[in-house]
Image (cartoon, rainbow, N blue to C red; front, side, top):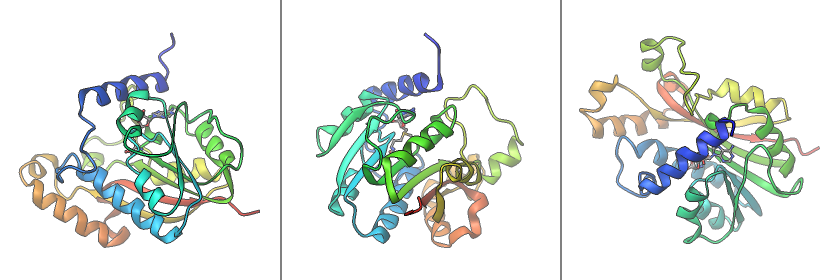
Length: 243
Ligand SMILES: C[S@@+](CC[C@H](N)C(=O)[O-])C[C@H]1O[C@@H](n2cnc3c(N)ncnc32)[C@H](O)[C@@H]1O
């Protein structure tokens, strides 16, 4: 069988789910490992509060479906799709909704079915962004909202390894400009962006000062785009025209 990016991602996340390394990232104590997940959760929570209400939401690359309660708090019906059945298993027993194993590049839903799509931590695992972007645009109704998250290389890693990426890595960085371009090609415009997971110090220092780092990261997040070169991640809300 051909080793596509999707198959590698599925294997990786099946293993992560089975090893228990995913559990507790959102609800456990704030550590250097869990902080990026918890910071992204807060950013999504704030964006959803701005939207106010949701009817029907699809979480693509939903993993353990940790965003389901946020949708349900807004009165929305929640559907989750992931290539890894093991990741979905972590979430589906405790949450109401629909749980589907599938690929972001071929969503098994009718056109215009959803008013909100979430795609957090997904795009970095896709060999190409275009097919999934097209599918997300198709299943959203006109005027619908996408909240997407992508990773970027922070200043320290760019200084340390200028312009070098490992082409065999399962996850690739998806900086804001790359995601904006891919989504603009199918009609999306960015309306709101938050940077999260700030790295104020090079690795050997931050591992010695984890609590200070987490506090600094929250503070930088509150200060807006000023510190964006130090952020490792962005969460962006996009809208598709209402026609
Ligand atoms: C980093 S996890 C993020 C999970 C969740 N969205 C979150 O933010 O907690 C990425 C998820 O995307 C899924 N994934 C990767 N490639 C996919 C694809 N082509 N189609 C659907 N899901 C995919 C993985 O199985 C994994 O559960």
